Amino acid sequence: MSKRWLAERRNDHYYKKAKQMDYRSRASFKLIQIDDKFKLLKPGSTVADLGSAPGGWLQVAKERVGERGRVVGVDLQPIEDIPGVETIKGDMRKEETVMDVEEALGGKADLVLSDMSPHISGSYAMDHARSVDLCEHALEFAQKVLKPHANLVMKIFEGDMMPEFMKEVRSHFKEVKLYGPDASRSSSSEIYIIAKGFIG
View 1 (cartoon, helix red, strand yellow):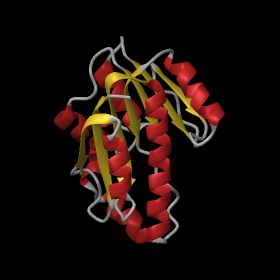
View 2: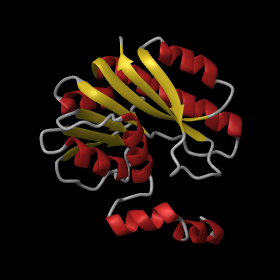
View 3: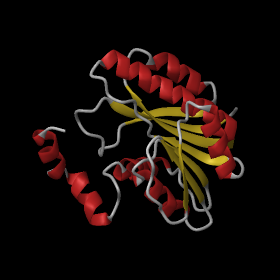
View 4: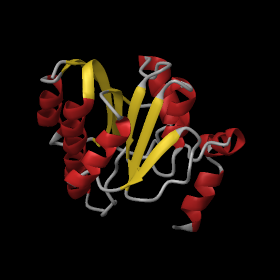
């Protein structure tokens, strides 16, 4: 990590705000902004969060679904415990991890969140392709676990494979939109797919 990157992070509004509010990452504010706009996290909901380390989205999800809600997080990296949240260390590209998350959910989900991101290679075309691949795994998982009319949020890097993938998402949901939260870094090519009303 460069000194410049570290300095920019220290001066970052959302980084400072996350520290003040005891959120594990500035990414918490991306989910807050997504949910404030689209109203996806409801009290009592069952939520799966894919790519959830260090746990910023899990904290927000648990706050918003409340005591009666169920939140399960999975990541390649271990996630420090969060009260009321079940976490799994595993790879969502592997069937055994998918089965572990399904078991932890204990039934169908109201919402699948995916903030999964590839390791950045420096090749934009490669990073975009890997991002789409992760989204395909998230979509496949969502088809297995979502209740009828439930919702899905996925981070994707913009690029030439997006239109075809968006067509696939639209075949499974009533309403699909793209949204860029203010909390995303201005230098980032990430955008979020908001898919509402699962139809199978």
